[in-house]
Amino acid sequence: MVTADEIEIRFVDAAHVRPLRREVLRVDMPEATVEFEGDDDSTTFHLAAVDRSLSILAVSSWMERPSIDDPSPRAVQLRGMATKAQFQGWGLGARLLQSGFRTAQERSIELVWANARDSALNFYLKNGFEIAGEGFIEGVTRLPHHRVRRTV
Image (tube, rainbow, N blue to C red; front, top):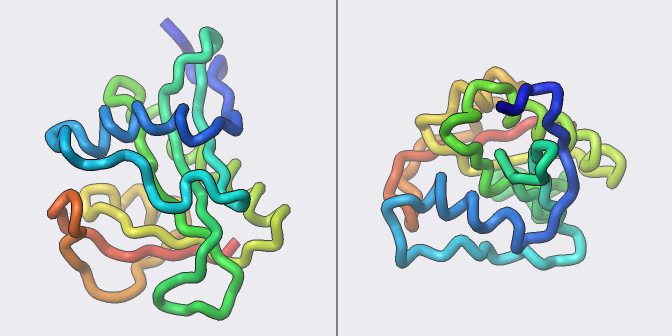
């Protein structure tokens, strides 16, 4: 069994994040795409938590695009945060966020925003995000979401 200290955060390409997006975020939606607009943009980066055998345990994607609520600061949209069920609660999501924040800061990004599932709101709030605006039902998953944001 892998331990938390044997897991590292690495940059990966879009093809490596899509299987876990399918497994975690689209599990009951075989027809829904896991290819997001912007996945292959030159300013997009993808992070993965990998174990020593290079198995991907958690992923996140960071796409440079203005915030819907405030288009003035340079921003990235965080998308596709997903962690394998057996590794949830290990702090991998928080580690992905910290690595993503560092990378965003190095790229002079001022704001990170996301459309967060309501079931994950506490995770985002614990990691320094604030809720921005009213809740909504996301079009693909049909699940309740809120926009969240955090300055870098």
